[in-house]
Length: 507
Image (cartoon, rainbow, N blue to C red; front, side, top):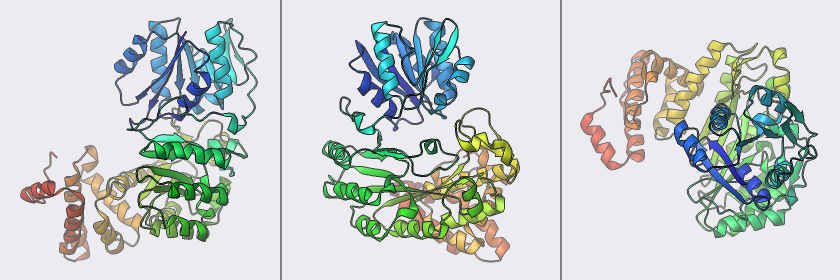
């Protein structure tokens, strides 16, 4: 039997960790098994043709909120082209309502529910041996005699029993390599899938250090830990971080999601000695509204969280990302303004403004009616409105998010943005809100723009704003020029100056 493990990643640089786990546990069960990864940006015909050309007996899809719609459509067409092909789905998008999912999508023969290593290894063996004995496989939903049968869920694995996912497959040097040293989360945030597992299962530290040695020795460019809270055990976190620093090859960058409240003086002191570019940390702020945080069962120690993350972001040798979620219970538009300003004031390298997604299986999805949530029926199930934030409010925040990404997160405007947020408006949020109105009224949101034209657009806004404030625009333009000179290459700057600051209406 020929078996394919496949998925549609969101970007080419991403790789799928789940497929590598499944390959590692099933490689001995089948005559032929391979991985092929595509992206949601590949053409449907390309992906369809590539899979059909392989003449696989079974095609197994890893499914997430960003790819479920396209993946189902692809599976339907594969079934039409080759009705005998066995189609297997797994991943968060299918795990919590497997029977309903299979009822809606008749092209799906099997669903692996939850943690997949045990169920998939058993399924692969049963398919390859042709035994048809699926009823004993825990964590599996399947079709039999026109019925959908759902077996009992498998018990959570002893995580140390799961093999290193790169033990039989090499790491892709042109992609981000994903790794997990623990499963589960110590917190119970009601909007997060990880909260469904009420404990943390961690690999022994010795095993993690051995795995890190593999990445360092092989010069992997970037390793991203998918642990939901890497620093849940502070001593363990520091030991792993310290090992990476001592064995640093000068090539690999490591990304961790951490809890800002768990940052302490020892962590700051340790990180401050790291090579610049070795570490990237992501800290979830989500909101600074304590009532909103309490409603989603998230710690409300806001002051300590902000202070710790500010100290970390002040280090010049690490990259720090912070996250906000718009649409939490009890947070209206004006409350979110404060959350935005608090997070912006941390001066992190990236501020991600996200919107609440009511994911299947989460507590907040079950309680959607209580908070008056309207959300999109199709993945990623993003909020439209709730009792506290209207659809119009959400749309206004979407416009702010666009400019935050274009100007703050993509970089190249540091001096100008500092001036604008301090001089043009009372707070950073007020600046982005007003700039987004200007951007929309001028019709700039209708098309994409080259980087150099983003400087021209911001200058056009500043001229309008300075006229309102009865002040000269020259100081702001000088800051923009400094930003541009430090970000664009000299040839691009030369072309910019030749063309001038005037914005071509067709650009």
